[in-house]
Length: 130
Length: 130
Image 1 (cartoon, rainbow over the protein chains, first blue to last red):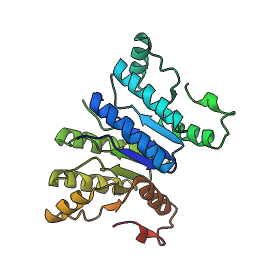
Image 2: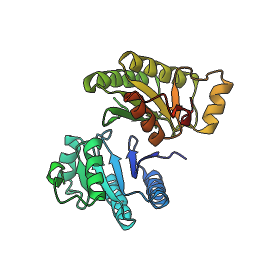
Image 3: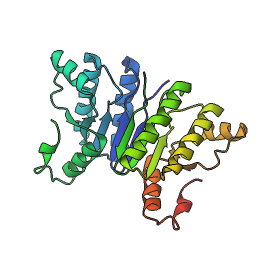
């Protein structure tokens, strides 16, 4: 079965979504991510969606689920690299991804997660789209 | 046209290969990577192939080409996450990927590239598969 690889970078996990997330693949990703967060004690999850030109309500829900699961496991999720057209479509669909933090690129997302992990998230969070 | 996303992490570029690399996609990746290395002055390229269960001679050649192009642009390439079965197949095919450095995972690959960039590659390179 096809799987989306989860890369570990320090205490963060990075997932790059490049293929269509059908049901089984999304569930597998949720499972794999939860296992890895718990195993490694990861403090943050970065999900790169820069390759996605279309995000439908299923993917939106999947991202929200992953963020919710990660939060329960004490890890924060940041979705990075959203294309402007995707942002427009999501808002038009009425999905503004509440509760999901976003950043322009992986670098900014990692910076935010590191600040959040060290408790320094009072300052500078305005650098990141929310 | 489908593209493989290239993520920037500091002065490094990270590519996760999850789909079959057919001709056009491989050429596109070479083009995109060379452009980004030059634009950003990247010092290293990480190519994660943990999702690949099969690596044929075409992919092997593509990886070698990318490493050669990156080297000319003054960036080093590390292939990470190779599955044991893939390593066995490659050697059986007579392709031992000469000139390509490998590491077990992204973390180790990044550590190596950072040491190499600061000129500290005399010590500790034995931690990485070569």
